[in-house]
Image (cartoon, rainbow, N blue to C red):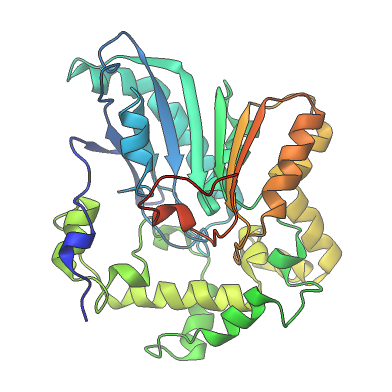
Length: 355
């Protein structure tokens, strides 16, 4: 049965769409929502740069998690949601480069774009945030952006890619996460060989930058609802999007995300990652929490996570938060006792259970 349209509000307006970068023929877009609320016209406003989740292989910049745009805009923040290229056609180095380039583009162009509707921005008053894979990117932005953001918001992001939960090394096969993954079948629309071939692709000219989730496609959501929800009236769903969902699920079952994220561009280097120590060394280079070991400063950071998260263990956030506190960095945490992965995207009541 198709999900009723009324459950999904249309994408908030007004917004404007832009391409911040074209690389090897792939246009990489971002979307801008100007600030609203009583503070919107009280001088230059701060802004949020948001990176979406999706296991680095799917998702969309068109509409962040349900609370993000209304929560920040109503408090006088401009909101920018940036796309990035997906694995397997690119690696994490390429993805982080995209996020850095989105920031640089905004520093050059955001003020002029907002001025067209009488908006003003304090370009240095930046909050960087993201959920899941986007949370990983937001914490990496805290290390990589220049000038650095004023605040980092990490919503259940992976901050230690060497975690056994991420690599599969030593994971209990009877853990709730492992049991859950085994219970979820692939779509059946593609053979195992087709999924494996798709995951082995490395041509960056074929990289994707937007892909709907299974719950955003028939029979769960009709196309008209998706187009309204995303604010993209010309978007079309095709079989490649179902294949991408199978790729995400198979990658999760195999615990191969880390390998795909750090896979070298040259085929000769792929085999080196068969050595678990080589793989771990590469993953450490992109683990925001571990990168703090070589630093004495980092932006103030807020963590949001659920105790029952089966995709990204809550300990990821807790350990990084503890390390930041040891460094004397202002740090805040909000943990939902019953929250699984993406719990905050479906909350319709006050955060009465947040501790």
